[in-house]
Length: 299
Image 1 (tube, rainbow, N blue to C red):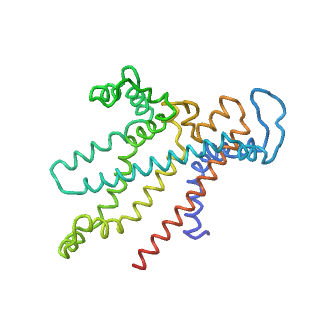
Image 2: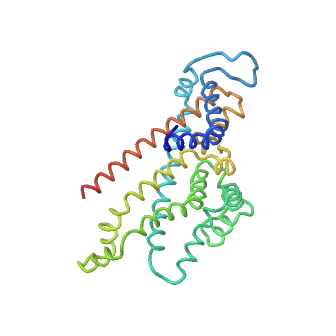
Image 3: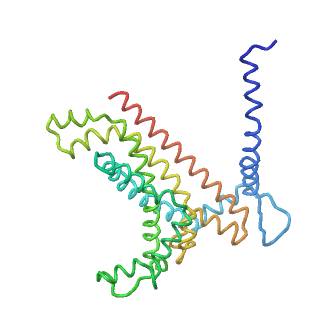
């Protein structure tokens, strides 16, 4: 007879089998198919035999100036949006960690933008930026900042800042929530001991709070950077990559190549480039987390 542990292991495998089959159907097969297409010349506009080209699609991307332009736009969007969200989220987390009347209600209200669907948020900001009846132009005209309405989403200079503002409004509450969770375990005795030693509020924040908050900061930056690097829906609704490709991030460039111009093989290669870049980012961030944990153990 089988012992109890092997029988439990077999039972666990049988219980996991449906989930493993489901994952294989919805994830493994599409990933394998996209990898296969990235190694072939697949043009939906010209049906015919799918010629094996090896890594030519990947080399074509690396030689393309449009690809590198979309990479730069994606990096710019990621760095600026995450930096703003980190600054605002940290400020909000510190304020919401204080004791005051109505704190729980305010914590709930802050999460509303993050809880909204991205599509709904994008449409709301699309109306806000409207040059004819948008509230932003109306407000700036009334207080005298503008003399004539600005086409925010139609100007190559203002389109990306407008998109970043919408993204910051949407995702700053998420950053605030993560950092607030990191502040909660810090005991009040740490603040009281620093105050007894004569430290100012700024010194308490810089020398006490920030070092203890480092792991939460790294996790927040990791999650938001990975999400921002793959941004698609917000920009698709607001600008569709325009004007003049000023907001054509890498995910949207991949979508256009695969589903607008029907270069499916090339688009699949671009999708795998995004996947590999994301994996590299994850590895770098994990090493940063390990280094941070090592520093804390030494301290």
